[in-house]
Image (tube, rainbow, N blue to C red; front, side):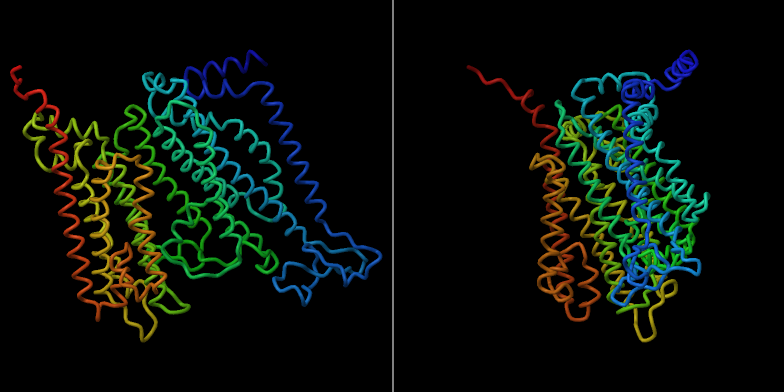
Length: 585
């Protein structure tokens, strides 16, 4: 048997050396024994507590005065959330138990606990492993090896959390048994596993991006713990949102909630045919009303989970391009300028579908403004990140400014420098990406009265919405020019520039506007959400509109002029020092 496994391990080493290296250092006999022991203890504890939840009649109390979640009687009058039922006996004196609900609770606990463990611990292990590789100097050695970028990426993703995968695989039989007891079909369960795997791959690629972007020379436990803590907070928020029994109206940010893989559990709970008051969680939510380009995709489990998998797949693809570039050149831009256009087209094409929602409750215009405002806020954050991703390091920018005149004549044109050269300033690429966004968004706005009609008597201000969206894109370009100028002038770390920019230009204006009344505040015209100010006040605040456009134009021209001057000075300062005439002594 040992010879049999050694042969296949040797073949694995020849086929995938990075994966072989990771597995060999982790799968030792001692670690495997501990893994199996922890798995047995964990499953025993879960079964012990689940068995303790099975109701048993107390002979000292009448049956009508005993209550349990898994009894089959009617809810008591004092139980408003209908999560407890009266325990009654049948004609044979037996206690009827809702076994399907009992199995469903166990299945939901294992699903959420396993998902949180996979995402949080997996992200922590990947970031910590790359930090250790950087501290030991082995990461640069791996970069010089002949293996491909894909071999390194999947070797890390499959190998570093391999013990975690082994632990979760030992829980898989119990998870399938609980799903069968709850009445969940195997195809639906397989769809949930596909969503979880796609989501884990997406977040693990992000963890590798963070790890490869680190240039620290010493291992920092605090950084790995901070990244894992952020992932844990996001997982907790996502879990709380899907566990609440609320039927709210969908809006644009509902798209971001689809990046939580646990949302697919809603389809699995519905397939049990247990009533929503009986289950008490994963009940009514915005998926029933959420539309994508006017289609009710998310009412169907196959279409809804398929969209989630495709959503993760698109994000994973573009992050993979970052990892392929950063693997060989750790200080290069995240994407090339051509790739950034593909990223923008992908994000905007998917996100624009969630602008067309039909609102049936409350004030239509209020929900419409909330949808447009959340769209503009998301675009602001996206273009902020895109600007940081396309801004080259100052050394590369200095070399570009100094030696660009030596490039071939056909490579000195504006199109080459702004669309192809990785080390040139990103203003041209950001402007083109904003134009693509405008061209893709304008048809969605014009089709709004037909694909998402308003109630009778309500007029959709299409002209105001179009102008507001254009103002938002202009604001994003203003933001991008200020960010690239501050990156060179301040010489602060990019993460610090990101935080300061969001606080100064997004959080503070919105906080002031909310405090003064978000619809009446003048500050909204100078915030990333001009749609609310424009649609609400276009008839009586026209001077503010022109003042906003004028101020943004002045900021763009001034910051671009200062930036270009600085880049020119950056490229000629050292050469002037060398060519300066020697002063006689």
